[in-house]
Amino acid sequence: STSNIFPSSHPSTSVPGALGRVVIIDVHGAADMNIDESDFITELKNGMSQQIDDYLYSGQLSQPVLLAFQCATAKSATLDEIIGKEILDYGLRDGVTRGAAQANHDDASFIPSRHIKVDGAMIQTIESPGQSHFDTSSVIVFDNILDDSLRRRLLNVVKGYPEDATDDIFWDDVKDGPNPDRWMRGGLMDVVDSKSDEEEDGPCWGLSDDAVMDICFNDHKAINEFEAKLGQLFEDFIVTTLPEAVLGDCVSPITANAPCHGDSFDFHIDADPMQVPPSPWADVFGRYPNRSKEKPRFVSVLLYLNNDWAEEWGAPTKFLDPPTQECYEVFPQPGRCVIMDQDISHTVVAPRKEAGKRPRYSMVWKLILHPKKAGQDMTDLSCGREKLWPEPQLLGSAIQQEL
Image (tube, rainbow, N blue to C red; front, side):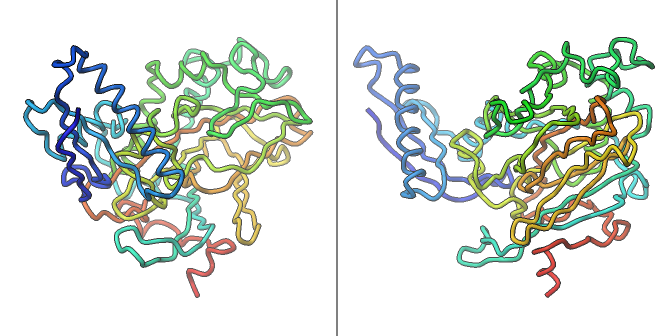
């Protein structure tokens, strides 16, 4: 039996951005009925969670609810303790950059060469119900954040080579394309609705399952070094990779791409916190527009890794402004870094015929930037360097911001 159901709907004081909708359920009577209490709580939680999910899908509930079960004889947990335990249990806020050295604000490597704003629209202001504000998504291009040594080492990690390898002694990908020992057709499945079905030109090259596990979970000094740079770049935030509890194990927090001539791609978004499925993440942080005040911001980081890439080989990343159908293209350059909001519509473009069989290698981090303080503005990624950053270029519907 259950008793003492206490709803709570105020923000957590210790975790900025947490939704704070918690139902605490005291459980008693299982032992009297000779029922294992742990099994009983698990069964009860699964049943109630499914009912809440049904309410969400039907529109009877607007936001998820975090369920907390405790024995009636146990000491009552506080709201912060309940939310904190859920965050720890599912790794929802595990920073990747603890211990990173403080950044020099004048460091030119943290100054972008371009900042593009797209997809302008009026959206709801979550902290002021009934109000709205104008919002845009960002694409930010950095051309000096990677030195050539780190770029080469990351390329070796992607290829499965020792980091200090200096030559492609294992496989000639210029002549033969991606190494099938590391890459597989149909392996590029890094968003929830990815499909492995063959298209007209065949499925695209992506890392094998073993290779994805390698770059995500094995210790690579080059990856650690770059993630330390991300911590310096985004020093006003807690930088985390995408936890499995957000979208499931179908989307890895780090991946790599190797598009070749003849491959075919569609526009897609990486993720949108407004559309996350029922999950521990949604229970804690809710659903909200990306870039909302005090809410974790979903961004992706794209690195171009080839040793050289000629302009005539093409293969840009193309960004779409849906209201106007205008596009913006960012072309590959060795070591170029592109940071984008995950709710931007974008696509890979396959290399041109002139590229031959050579792949255009890139590496992608799916990040979540958590606020460090209550009420934090999540729209500004410059972290105190705004006077050094270029003026944003406004594309399509984003131009309304100036009107």
